Image 1 (cartoon, helix red, strand yellow):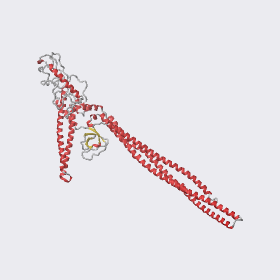
Image 2: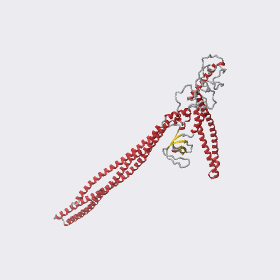
Image 3: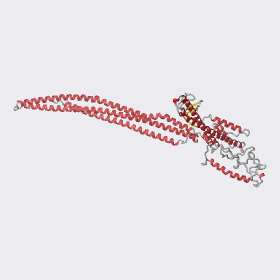
Image 4: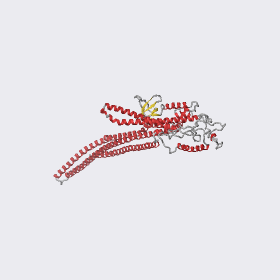
Length: 615
């Protein structure tokens, strides 16, 4: 009746194996949780790195915005200097560099943070499912083991009771005092207990066989499959995490070419600084156009001051003393401060006083009829306002800005009037184009009434015609002012050249080289040698007109193509990305700019495809 003993020892060994597997299951649970925690830590790191990149880019953009010029380039004279242009280009490159840092932050945020966060959630769900499946298998095995234990204990109990009943029946059978009925009853009870023990044995054996089968399935099939799934999940997580590590460097490598271009642009901007050109630009910006002052003449005060008016006059050369001025040279004003739109004042003496009208070109008349003291008094009075005008020229804040820019020096006035005239012509052309468009639209409405009412366009046409008339009057006005300013500039230049046709002393240095800045009209004129007295007038005017006409066809700036453009339509020209072009005409509001290629050929390209720098 010791049948159940081997089964008991087998169940105990199974329990030990179960404990071993349970420990390994807990190890896997800890390891997979550590892997998911590492994935989340990396996502958090990349997120903070993204915030750092965004803050860095924002600070760079704020820095660029702080140092960019506040005024438009056309209104800022400093923008014409190569130093300022290079600095602005460096700021633009830094701004582009900030854009690349923002692109890095965006790529990291989308391709690392969002993707890995989503993948981490999927891994958590998969891990939870696998461990729930393993725990469910463990619970089923534990339930089977409990049933086995119960059947084993029942079998053990039935065996003891059957053995006890058999001993009782044997004792009564040997007892002479026991009745036959008691003996039969004891035998029946022993037989019943033996039968129950046999049934418990069969039940225990069946339960043991079922448990062993379930246990084998658990340890040899079910749990290995669960462990394989956990292993595959952890390996996939590790592969995805490694790919996330690679995305960190790929995001940087993707912007390296653009960043290299930004750095190259900064280097080009550094080499673009041209001090000679900046000096010439400064000269062009502040060239006054005033005539150079004449020579200071010798004033003879050795004669008695109470001479007769008939033989005394200021500036009359003494007998036998040569005239200090050259013959035939007109006495020009020493420093012209008069405004352009007012009549020119009479020429001044070297000390600032007016010369008698009867002596415009020759030496002073000995019969002026005025006392020298009176002339000296007038000269001293005329000096003060000239000095006041000189102070106002040097930047007095009380200068009144006039519409014809007569508050500026002659050359600056001419340039500003030329700019205003060009702006008015551009506005006039826009209004003319708009008028033509409205007329065409009106014709379409008249031919096709269902498209619109022609009368609705009358107010716009009337307004456009009014604008055209107004602009035409302004163009005429500025043309008149410009002609007066140009004549004054030429007159001042002619006076200066005539006064210095025969200089009193040889020059201390050679005149500036004309070939160094041949593109500038005013520089060419200022660096020319004075012509001879016989041909002073005509060559000056002719050369000035030729230079002025050529200025309209010369480039007004340069530009760089930001994008590639195929000039397929009529009037356009193709260009490649990064190609340097010459700017021939600015955008007139229609979105097109006329450029010239270095290989030759002109045409229109989209303004938004260019980075323009005006001269």
